[in-house]
Image (cartoon, rainbow, N blue to C red; front, side, top):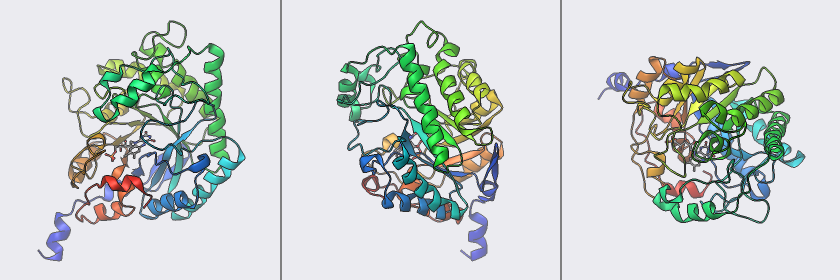
Length: 390
Ligand SMILES: Cc1cc2nc3c(=O)[nH]c(=O)nc-3n(C[C@H](O)[C@H](O)[C@H](O)COP(=O)(O)O)c2cc1C
């Protein structure tokens, strides 16, 4: 094949290299690094290895780095998720601000923007002596529905004693999100992402299985958004009017991959509408395969497409980009590299989403974006890469 022929057959990724303005911040391109917990933060602090890890991804043409989930300022926010050693970061005071400021300073000279993902694990935490796990109705979900590799851990989490939180305790958790958001700003981050997915605390308020409350925090789908709305408002107050606020949501839960937050677009609107009104700028729709139709009876539109259509806000796609298999299908086995960029580009051109997040491909290879841009063979995913910071 001549060079000219090879160039013609490469997918033209240039539309993904257009800048995107989210509120007062312009991201240089549409390619984001998806939030990925790495458990390399002993004493809850990112060290030099973590600084270098994010810097390399930013140098590799990532437009927006979304960090691994960082715990909010609340005693029950993070612990062992049951997936191995914890070593999870959190925002709790000047040491944590200083440590993340070093990451931000390493990323900014590349031109990339960087935002932290905030999480409170809620019911998804192995019992420990520090603080009981926190769940709106003291529930974990049905552990028998968890994935095979996780079911034994799920049974332990489900059996843990989780007291029913009072109004005051819930307000304290909301404040913890606000305090963490303020610390993120003090560290110099460009905005904020909230983890409202996968069965962790925010999602456990949204999900009818774990939220059976009959007070202002529970009830129908709109009432179950009350907690998330309060969190969004607290974070918006902390970050100001110019910084972008991203919100990740998902149908699936780690407690149950088949779970659905919303069975119809109308039900999804009941959840995303109040969040949009509260100040979310971009909905990050977490799915395992970015092009799966969210409501196949209605249309071919992906979950990110629906989030955009229903709220009029920006949306982000993620899941399986560059791979033949989705994330949970490769926890213990490899996935072949697959150039599914043409399908991605088609949907992007149709206006289905505005941002594209890359997870395992970037975890595995900091130069993945450049390889994809050049149409090179995309590497397979090696689960061994989970064990180190390349
Ligand atoms: C090791 C690992 C850790 C992850 N940690 C998080 C996390 O902290 N927060 C989150 O929202 N998603 C997390 N995810 C999900 C990713 O953000 C992403 O949605 C998922 O990997 C699908 O994208 P991919 O197919 O490109 O890998 C994690 C994924 C992996 C592989």
